[in-house]
Length: 67
Image (cartoon, rainbow, N blue to C red; front, side, top):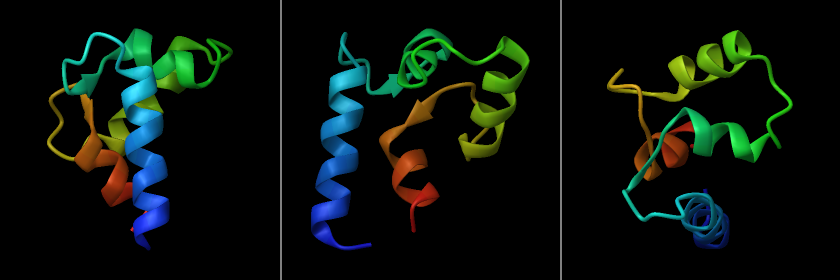
């Protein structure tokens, strides 16, 4: 992944992480998909991305996804 792509991931993450917790929970992650996913589908996607299985999507999880 080049630096431009990584910068875009960081920018998108910061846009969605409105309260600057450093992670995305269900509600924030769902907003990426404009709340159009069923809860079961959303949780399945989160489970696949969440590398440490803590129920939170971090910037590291997203960067690793695109490597």
